[in-house]
Every structure is written in C-alpha cells, then in structure tokens.
Length: 550
Image (cartoon, rainbow, N blue to C red):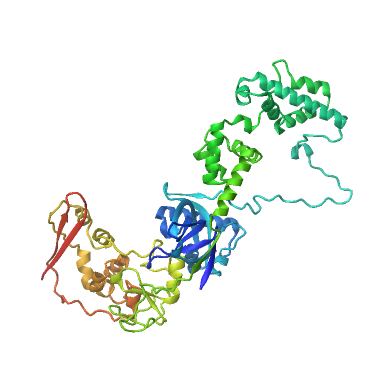
C-alpha cells in the first residue's frame, strides 16, 4: 500500500519508537544523490515540547479565546484531550528522510468562528494560534490570523424607510478627494497632469539625491510619471476648487517646484536587497521583515514598497526563476505504508503477536489510559521499571496526539519521564528533612547522616496502608500524598478511608501485609550516602546503606 505526498502537506514523522510522532509541514521534496527522497519541513511543536511557563501562557491565551468566541462548556476530559490537539507553529526548518513518514494529518489556523469540540470529533485534526520560537523560547500570536467576527466586520445599519432622511454628518464619515462633476473638461485635466509630470521631472533635476539615483533624463521622467505625481496633481485640483491658475501656482511655489517621491525612490538599492532577502525568508510577514531586517522603516513603508516592487521587472525575473526551480523539484511522491512491528509491543517469547502478557510483565495489569484489561495487543509505556502499558487504541492515540486519553500522575503535560535523578526523587519525597536536601549537594566523598523526623516515624506505624513503604520504595518516581499522611496522623483510625494508590494498577493488586518491623519503635535510623564525583563533571554514583537499629 502506498499513499501520495504533496508539498505543503502536514505529516507524521517518527523519530523514536516510544515517543509520539513529530508533526511537520512539507516545504520541499528533494531527491538525494543516492536516490532517496528527503523532505525539507517546517517544525510544529506540541505542548509537551515547551516549558511550563509557556504552557501557562498558552492556557491564558486559550481562556481568552473561549471567552471572546463564547465556546460551549467542555468537560474536564475534553479540555485535557483538546490540549493534545493544539500545536505551535515555528519558523524552524529541518530535513528528514521521507521513509520516516507515518501518515498525513490536517492542521488549521484557529479563528473565533471555530468550535473547539469539533476538533475532538475528527481524526488527525489539529489547530494552532501561537508561534513558538525555539531559540528565544517565546510564544507570540500568529500574524496570519483570519480576521473574522464582530471586531473586524462592519455593522450594516438598517435600510432607510421611504422618505426618511439620513441624519448622519457625512463629513465625519468620509472625506471627498475628487468631484467628478467639476467644471473642468477632460482635456484640461489631462493637460494639467502633463504639466505636473514636467514639474516633477524638473524638480528631480534640481534635487541632488535624485540626480544620483536617476542620472539620465529618461529615468527622471519615468519616475515623475508614477502614480504619486498624478495623485498629488489631482489632490491639488481638488484643494483649489478646480481652478487651474491657482493649481499651477501650488505646483510651483516660491521656494521651487514640489517634488513628490514614492517608496520606490525613497529606498536605496541596499535596502531593496535586504527586503528581497527578508521576503525569501519570512514570506509576506511584514512585521518580522521590519523587525529583523529593516527596523528603521515603518510598517506602512514596507507594505507600500512590496506592492510597488511587484510591478517592477525585478519581481518578474525572480518569479520566473522560482518557477523554473520549482519545475525541477519533486511535486509528489508515493510513500509505502509502514508495517514493521513496534519494538514496544509486549509479547511472550515464542507466542504470536497480540497475546496478553510478556516475560517480565505482570499479567492482569490494566491499560494506563482507559483501564481496560483486554486488548489484541499491548505496548510498553513509560519507565521500564514501572511496568506500565497501553492497549492498542490508546497506543495509537499516544503516538498521534502525544498524551493519554485521561490524565494520570505518571503523565504530565510533558509526558512520562523515563529517568529521574536521585536528587529529583528525594526532592519529591515529603519525608526528607530540608537540611538533608541541602546536604545532597555536599562535596566529593563526604559522609553525613540524615535524621528522620517524628512525622516520618509515626507515619511508618500509623499510616502504613497509605504510605505502603515497600511499594513506594519500588516506585520512587511516583509522589506520595503527603496531605493524606498528615491528616491520618492527626485524626484517629476510626474514620480512616480507603488508601490512595500511587499507581493506577495498584488498585487491582493485593496490599502488602503489616510492617515487617513489628510494633517496636525506632531508636534511630541513619542513611549513609557516599557521593563519588569525577574531577570535571558532576556525574554522581550513589551508594545507599540503611541501618535500622531496633
């Protein structure tokens, strides 16, 4: 099976068998020297790819959008899944082999006429409204926003009834720049325009800067015949109430002839080259062109120059070159459907793919996302020692949308973490004293003792079913509910509720028995930590030895 790919398609790229797909937009399809197809793509980022501060900024932007567009109320699960459909456009390009493409998707620019819930009803459908800069680590509103809505469209008043007069003041609504019912005839107006061009040519001959830019009479006359001269002449007639004598005097005042120049004359050759370079990089994003290449120009000046530049021979030549270059490139390729098995599939050695269970995996564990216990195929997910897994449906959702269908403790907005340092695990524990946390940064090969707090010793006795120390030791990546432990220590055992599981799969497994340490108190608990550092790096090897003196 093959599926076609075109330039400007949005596609899934796979760079890791366990991570979600990358979403990219194809800009070019090129054939390499060895015959392979390579795609030049624009990078799009998910929420899991950006920092927590930028996620907070994206949440604020989403709330403003919902309030302005009056979106229908969504459930918590819908809000969670909707974050998986949001992408962030960037201006970062990269080249990837076309063999890593796993399918096509649809990405649209969000506008206030869209219903957010509609994206959840469509497969492979995403939206974006912000632009992410991977270098500056910033989020900005996309300047290509489709301006639809009450903010941008005019409100059409009701039609006047027959015989009803318009009470509005026309002078406040519009400005008259030309009266077609003037007393001048068309030949007279044409003659005045010829005089205006001649005055413009003479003014350029007197101006030193114009003489350098247009050294010949032919070039000066061509510049004087541009629209800016004609607009000035017609505006002069309107201001002088179409009196030719007064208009002639206005064209040539006492100080000398009036010189009117447009943006094509005001810009130097080097500035025009900078503009063409910026246009090649950013397209018609005039804000970025002005900010990065021409900060001394106004935005209006850049826009006017662009539309005048499109009328020049230079633009026509570049357009022909780009057309010839585009003809030499690939416009369409066919990619075979990827059918190889994923390395994360859980299979018992010697069994057929799709069997429930695997060597090293506990049978009976449910899906970490939808909690089902039956699936034609299971996939390992998350840190290997956690033994979490996903069913076939949730695995496809994870690969496409970069998250789980329901929120879990193991899956934050940045996805599951495959590795955490010992310092991070100790920092997550509510039973480590602050003094001990500070001492984790001690010097090389320095031994120190951590004294456990009274709360910790009481919790081991009173809150054993909530704390579950043996199970917590096997799962150092999951945080312990410190508030539940403190509340249990404060109140009596009479109204104790069900224990809070650390992992969702613990609900299906038997609890551990009573503490193996019995009912005798702890006289002292000490932890010996030895840090070994290299002389140039900060890699730390930790040896923990726990001694319990009863």
